[in-house]
Image (cartoon, rainbow, N blue to C red; front, side):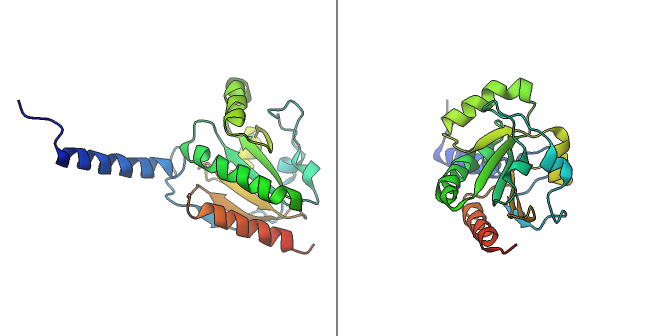
Length: 193
């Protein structure tokens, strides 16, 4: 009987699995296949009232309200525990938070999962990734309003001190996203009111 795993088959299998991982890992969603980070300007000039005023459940127990961050540069990240690119992005967000927190930048991670069904997974995720910024859950209305019809996650929003959405990032690229986020944060910090 011939050996099933020849060198050629092993290499071919590795290449196919790598391509599949790259395709699947670019963003998590049901029908929007983005292969790289997309940085766009937002449809909304400022955060909509529903997003600002909705009281959001937090993993720490005390509720999150985005209006509490008025006057500060804010990075809001929509994510889920099951999302591969979100898992790749989280260590980068933790680094960014450590780097920019002293300069007044706040970060909020909002899971798009059902809070009752995912509570323990989110708490475990926060511990596993040493997340030191605020984490909670987006209500369906808040998530839909922010996503503007693009259901890919992760999505990140850089918000100026005046509540203007400066930049929106869809998906995650390990090479491109971190420097783009840094530049957007620098731009937000430099913006005059």
